[in-house]
Length: 173
Image 1 (cartoon, rainbow, N blue to C red):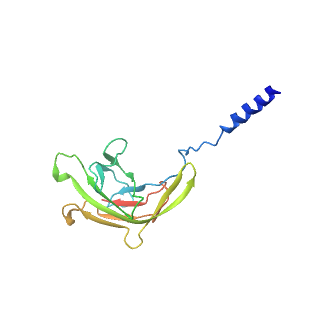
Image 2: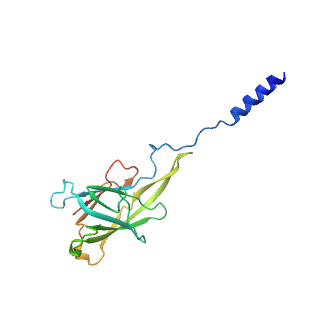
Image 3: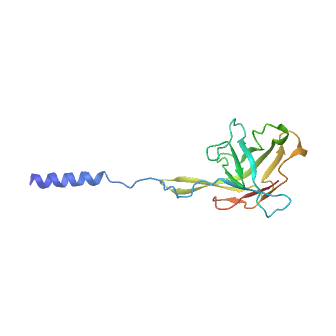
């Protein structure tokens, strides 16, 4: 009898330690980053490579890391937006680190948006989705002089930023 009671108690204790793992699957969509594509101003349907682009958030001293480096060259980038507040400002420096200062050009873009938190799961928590301000989604300025902007035109392609599967902003230069 004691063996049966001991077996029942051991069995009950073994099941009491079982609980569902709360691990957020890496494939679960979380707060999306802003996806920006770069295009040729003279031929708007053609993607264009940026050279040694450095993107620095307002108030930060170091740039966003792209594959472990502060500069990137390519046709698209993904950058985070602040989940607290309704604006995020970045400086976009083309040809960053070039020894010829005449080739280095910095523009500043402030993105204006609203946020909404969505419950994903108990393991993953909440994610934030962003909606650009319909009347003024961005403000584009130059760091030194307004007539020296390297970015010629900015187009908002998607007002709602819900995933990273599409280009939200197109920058023409």
